[in-house]
Image 1 (cartoon, rainbow, N blue to C red):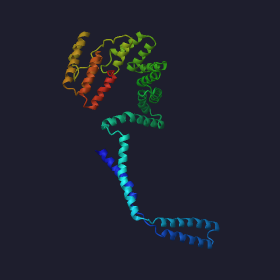
Image 2: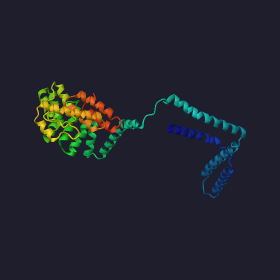
Image 3: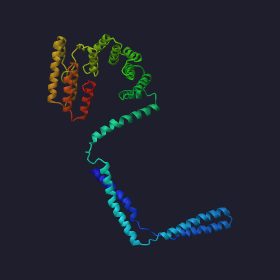
Image 4: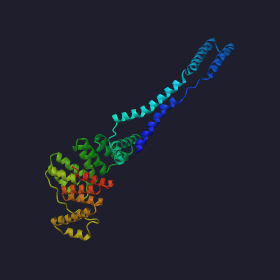
Amino acid sequence: MTLWLAFALMTAAAIFAVLWPLSRTGKLRSGSDLAVYRDQLDEIVRDRGAGLIGEAEAEAARVEVSRRLIAAGEAQTGAMPENPAGALWRRRAAALAALLFVPVAAGTIYLLHGSPQLPGEPLASRLSAARENGSVAALIAQVEAHLESSPNDARGWEVLAPVYLRLGRFDDAVRARRNALNLGGANAQREADLGEALAAASNGIVTTEAKTAFERALALEPGDPKSQFYLGLAAQQDGDKAKAATIWQGLLKNAPADAPWLAAVSDALAGIGEAPAARSAAPPIAGDAGPSPSDMAAASAMTEAQRGEMIGGMVARLADRLKQDGSDVEGWMRLLRAYIVLGERDKAKAAASEARRALASDPDKLRRIDELAKGLGLNG
């Protein structure tokens, strides 16, 4: 309704712009202009007689003023309408034509080239599309402009590097990672991030330079999972599958239950024909408060099969509770991670679908589920 009101106002404004000149009646030019020009001619004669101007200047001035005097006389003569009644009729006909032609022409053009049959698009989806299509590029441009004026801002390079990586601008990502490392100082994360960018820029090949960066990261932080994963990948690419399996199995053995890279490591092991090793401890995937101290003590005395059965029971209870109350996003996230740890990817995918249905009315919770499912490799 608001849109059509705006269209109506715009049409009225266009019609008014056409009708305004037609509503003005012609006015006879007074003789004041003619009198002014005659006075100017007399003044030129006086100035020439007094010697204030030369003959050439006086002649040029007389020609110009005479031209204006003639034009003013012709305008005064032509301003007198020969037939006032006929002129009024013509103005009314033009006004009527404008009243009909402007809206009809506008409507015809819209019907031919517009899309009046399309339904309205909700504001939320339009804003989301604007963020996806335009704002990322705008934000990148802002950060790049900032870094042009402040190239020593290590934090700015760190912010920009992962964006470059996601957009496939791998050479820019390597440059940003190098700058962040050089300006911010060496630590395990920056070294591993540089190695990751170097591998991406080489089409996934862990080059010697990338491998060196991962080794530096492990020297600074021996348990860094990203570096271990890529060093396992380097071993696989070198043809040493046994070494790759050893690195990846060790990475999985004591990994946290909610580690986002569990699926990637498991898939890498499957790619070389290895099954993930049994985990050395029960993951914390119980109900709301987690296992009690007595549960942990009992679990430590259990066999591997008994621990697996206990964990399965805890996961089943969590799944049952979520069927009764599907609004607990943290519970859904724990359930997805638990299924991944147990190697039950089909159940994890089914749980992700159930979580999306249960949380469909809450965009923020739905976004968290989507991000976790993507990180766990459940969208494929």
